[in-house]
Image (cartoon, rainbow, N blue to C red; front, side, top):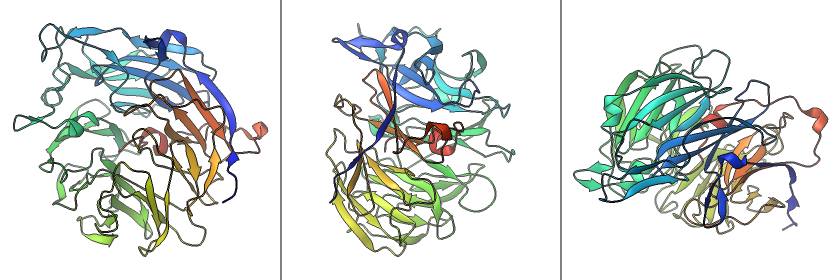
Length: 452
């Protein structure tokens, strides 16, 4: 194997000091989102923190140069805990990447921040329910609240099923932008909280709610659903793994499709968008019937699955972290042939798989696994210089946004550790700043997977 090439460190973006917290002498920002908040054609950043690690309560927006734009909320919020007498929930770095998104949800040409938000009038809180949560839409450039709503159905959502806590189902709360209403642009979003999937429009009106019956490990549905039009009707459907939902919330399928269905996608396969499932490495049609399956012998625990063109002569391909929270990957072709099997670097959680168009969309894709890039044969081809060691723990590793930040048609790698104080942006060599043409926000950023 050749010596890996060192990527060019385009920028280390320090999180503004006023947005940081400190624990045991370590300064940390929290979870990160990216997007053009100000409308100037450059990428901006949003850091947020959550009460009890679950309920967003502080947002801080800053530029590519690390200059603050605005902040909202209280980074030191502390509220009595309803579950633990004489105890309080404190503000933490989020337990998982959570319900905060940057997107032009109003279709007015300017980015907004859409998020769950802890109700400032609440005097008590539980980590395990949303009884004190409201929905907010903030102006991306100013942080001004443009719309807010209290949804009774959302506030009933919690981590319990039949009086038992189902924590993994609950903590993966993510807003996924979708087109459910048939508008020219996507102006709706879907969120999964515990066993409930709720859909909202840009006015924060509840469109529908669905309750998933597949929640018992390991026969659970996907922790984070995927959205996309996989039946060709021009609207987005929801791929939850063991369930599929049409844009109006009606059921396309509801059936067990394999153990450890942790990760799902909607990506192009055999010439059209398809629902892709990590359990058994499957691609299914719009009724949930498998049209491609590697099988549970090949993929005993499909922790993560991604789709891309990783091999020059055989694509599209799937890359699967096939054996749970372990560093083993396989790359397969469209006929189900395993083209490579390899081990990536060990990381604290052994998750964080992404597809990177490092050399542009006309070249083969690379595979990010924290924190390096691998080709489809399993060679480590790119490393990231000047990247500090990760802080460790379940979330303390380098999460990745694939994004064309420099505007030269090649994707950069935007890395952050939620327990650190900076964001790192790496770009391919040779770095050509004169080719900069602006940042473009796509679903690869606003609906990024981040973690499964």
